[in-house]
Image 1 (cartoon, one colour):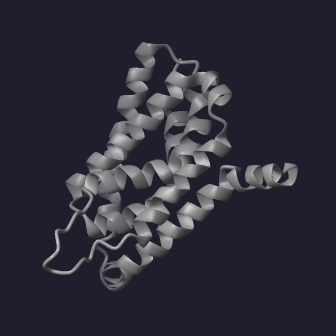
Image 2 (cartoon, rainbow, N blue to C red):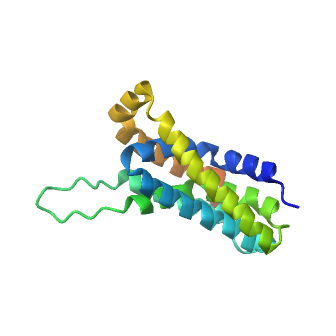
Length: 192
């Protein structure tokens, strides 16, 4: 039997660290694009958790997911503000939200949702996924409302671009360490 409270608490727990980043993303991009990118990311990770089961742990150790930390660092350091006469290539806001979410939350989502969802039959997984996706949309709308508080709006208007770069670099470094990538590489270096 599916436990909606467990799924709700798990969703909040694994996404809590992303909520601040989400506030920054909502300040920079259209709400629709943020929702679409976030929903796609959540759907991918929750479905991967369900589909992979214990096999994921055998084929992709968590430290390997640490390489995803390169993505937010790249996005922070890549300057889209090019000269006026040059061809300007920018990434879609949906893509930026999706990649950011996958980089920040892959390890947590895969490891925490895995035991919660693995025992569900396919019919109940569909219902659980729908519930999680509704929560995803509601969280974005709630965070958008929080972002409208005048003090927060003033702060975000003044510092959001710098904060996003700092957060992206910090997230990338966090992913390197949290996934075990750094300790794995140190162990490998010790063997050489």
